[in-house]
Amino acid sequence: MRMRKKKNLSARMDACGALLVREPALEKGRWRDRKPDAARLRLELGCGKGRFTAETAAAHPEDLYVAVERVPDAMVIAMERCQALGLTNVFFIDGDAAALEQYFAPGEVDLIYINFCDPWPSVKHSRRRLTHEGFLRGYRRVLREGGQIHFKTDNRALFDWSLFQFPKAGFALSEVTRDLHAHGVQGVMTDYEEKFHTLGTPINRCVGAMGPLPDVPLLEGLVQRLPGWEVRAAGGNDVLPVLSLLQSDPAYFDLERRQPTAQSVGDDMALLPPRCVPEQKHYLALWRDGAPQAVLDLVEGYPRERTLYVGFCFLAPTLRRQGLGREIMDAVLQAAGDAGMDSARLACLVQNEAGHAFWRSLGFGDLRRGETIGEHSNPVWVMERLV
Ligand SMILES: C[S@@+](CC[C@H](N)C(=O)[O-])C[C@H]1O[C@@H](n2cnc3c(N)ncnc32)[C@H](O)[C@@H]1O
Image 1: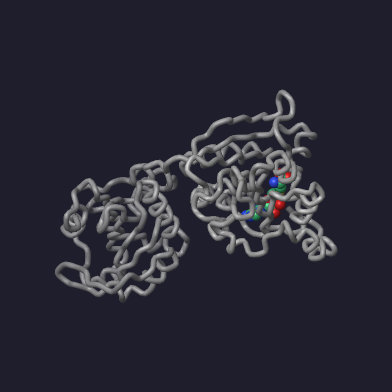
Image 2: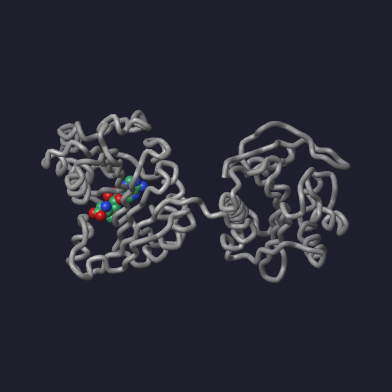
């Protein structure tokens, strides 16, 4: 929302000081102290000028209401509205919906409202949409089991896209409508909603209830998350095409002190860590333009039950420095989460400084130094991150 800078903003904020929570992190896990008899804690993300905030909080004096808004010039109007109504059950955070974990403890929130969030129409900005799977998974960390998200928007494309995001993040959909007010106004309207409704734009609404995260098999999840690639388990027929891919980067294998051969590729396809069974192993080739361009060796449940071990990750040298390695690994980590893993581990050769920097940039941290097993043992960084 672009707004002209309001005059006297800080004086106006101060005048509503009782409603503004200046240090929300200090309230984490203690919001109900502000209203010990509260039946529920309702949280609104991006309240804007707060028509919905004020009317909903007024209609539910039995509940505690917290509104988050990152544009203070809009939020001050919402605060003034609530103050004018004499509401004592509503509080405001001048903050970001991406930081909810800093403000709320797990399970502290009963209901989240997302009303007319910015649609970010470009695909490359889709992660910024407040209904992106990544955000929805973040809300899981503060919502109680069975807690709900109530989502409204005028934007049909955003709505249809969001309907696919909710289930991926473990939210069961209900009350899905693409014309909420078809038979007369339903519920409390927001400022934006009133504007669009007056223009005749249908309003879309749905409710998502938090259930368990879906367990999607790892390979299936990867196929879904890498639509630009043909992701396949590599078998005997793939040995030579994979070998020719690996031979495109002899410098990498110099670090390992062994160059790949047909024999070593075939062996690696079947190689299992100790105590693992073949079902845990995925030696995958990612194909494009008729040739494998990337290889992944993944082991589910190693070395711990819910850890994904990334044994090998290789991208054709001609495709590097274009963000593709990151795209592939983001997909691997997300698919690992969907498959029920909670962490990912790998070993990176100590001499492979570029590789080490890459893994660190993906959020992996060094657990310890170790050694590879096999004919030539090499020093490695054992690295891990949560997924
Ligand atoms: C299109 S306006 C809708 C305002 C209000 N919900 C309504 O329906 O009238 C979107 C609002 O969300 C706020 N917003 C967008 N992203 C946000 C974020 N990550 N955290 C907090 N507020 C956000 C914007 O500043 C803006 O005020």
